[in-house]
Amino acid sequence: MRLIDPSALSGRDRYQLITSLVVPRPIGWISTWDETGRANLAPFSFFNAISASPMLVAVSIGQRQGALKDTLVNLRSRGAFCVNVVTEPFLEAMNATAAEVGPEVDEFELAGLGRAVSERVDAPFIEECPAVFECEVSQEVALGDAPYALVIGLVVGVRLSESLTIEDGTMSVDSGTLRPVGRMSGAEYMLPREMKTLPRP
Image 1 (cartoon, rainbow, N blue to C red):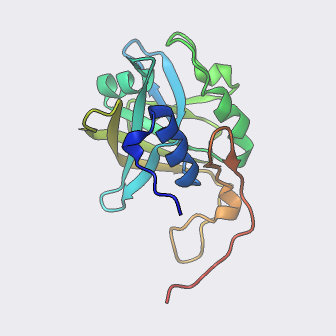
Image 2 (image 1 turned 30 degrees about the horizontal axis):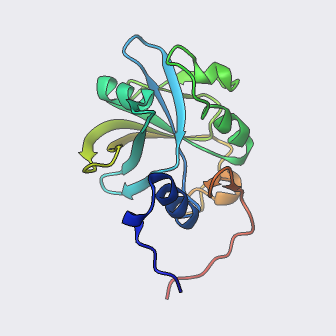
Image 3 (image 1 turned 90 degrees about the vertical axis):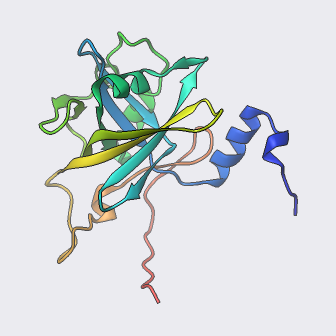
């Protein structure tokens, strides 16, 4: 068995190694306003839930060619964002919003998505998306010398489509009706497959 020293790898090699092993990863499809009111929509696969009480999510946002990404700039100026859960019908639209475009480009329009305005936070969301977290920025955590910023969001609202089934006696959304997509390595994504249920011992 090989032992790899991450410090001996290039930045690109480290990225390829960790993103091919930590899989599948949920995708934070994040929507924000910029300071002038222009909409921004971008996917991030360094994303996850980190607490239920309080309900917190976290996203790690890197740089693009040494410059801050629009999402991070908007989070800092507005203090709010929405996370649109990526589901199978929206896979191609999500991929379209990953394009490197200027802040003047509305990714909602680029991907042919409807845009709605959150009632709880200062951010837009995808009108057709079946599940949306409305979040306020709770804190930003520096990651040392890494060209990333870890943003923690407090979930103050959860929007759920009537098309989703909630399991009886719970608040658990049925994965079969949600049909979430996971990020794999490179350009690969994990689509919903057969679910296996294992009761906890």
